[in-house]
Image (cartoon, rainbow, N blue to C red; front, top):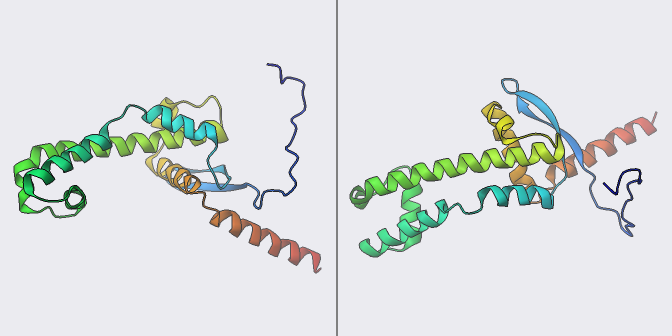
Length: 180
């Protein structure tokens, strides 16, 4: 705890970051609405939480291996089999592999749900409450988890659209006040 009593220092920026973080409201009437900071990027800690929680998961590798195996047996490309697997209606050749495909799709659904929970938990820990836990996230309404996952995904892409919009709104409000 060497940082106790020390004033937090900022970096000596020559050029300040283009956008400042904004507080955004996410959620629905059913789930409740929370305020959380949108930064336009994920922190190293947020990425590390996700990587640590998903480490060792073989779901995507197993799915690719199954696609490759089916492709070899059917004389197709693995990508084509994967696309067929994700399509609303499957081709006839899938009947031979229905149990394997069903198991893989179920496992993929579990993987996606786990990824959503981890992303939501990472944002809640780093941006709202450092004492938050995965058990706390499990108790949340699915709409709120979906909203947090959407924010995580946008931050992962380094999307600045919401930050740009907030900057425009702030400048319009500032112009409106200074004109009076």
